[in-house]
Length: 301
Image (cartoon, rainbow, N blue to C red; front, side):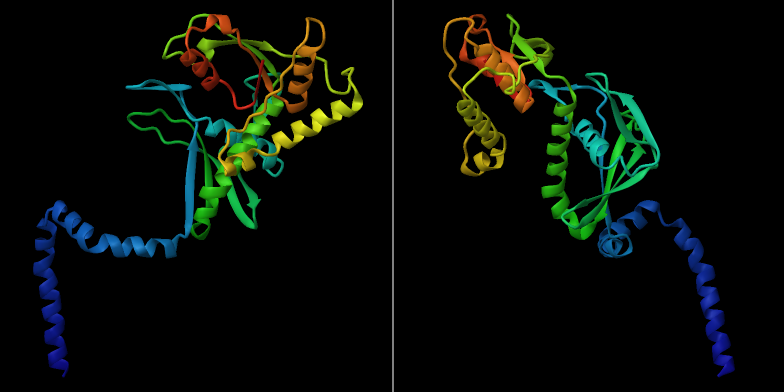
């Protein structure tokens, strides 16, 4: 038996002695093909058990607009919305922050410094946010990135509910922190005109509110209640398949308070005002273009 064991050991060592050079000569492409055909699927099935966490990167865009064969296309505002959300919700827990001047107004926007991690709770699920630096590639320079990390079993909740919630909340923070604006349409429009080419604006700092508005208290309260119902019914309008909009007909001679009422509504809802000069528009397409190139919260007059 000892003799047989020695023979087997000698055979094994001899086999590897002769097979090693052969395997070393096998082209890398052959090994890659074998891996792709026979091992990739089992390895991918094994990975979730080893690391069950999923990451989503939301990166800053280097430019406001990109180009396609259809003309200018506005890039996503998701990164700015995420920063606004984290600044309002999660930055209280962070110990190391970055403060940057807000794009509008005189305030600051707080964001996480690279390497900082904060947790956010959504419907009983803990979700982690971190600030990372995007790797530089051939086609893109390095930049900032917000990284979202969560367990694989919460993928549908995060993608379908949490991320839309973050964007909506971020938009509310962004609109709430900046001053209201009064927009006026420019005279000349083109098919490829973008927002800063079709609208001009000034900061809207009107002191009128419903508290200072001279009006019958009962009617004033009725209008305020109607505005509250409208502002809280966006999901309802979406469910019934109707556009989320509300119109008021204000009429009367000059000096009767039409503009004052609009200012009070805008301040109450925290909406921008768009003053459209219809005589400068030649077609319905021009009017449609103006409405497309507006912010989400607007009060046309």
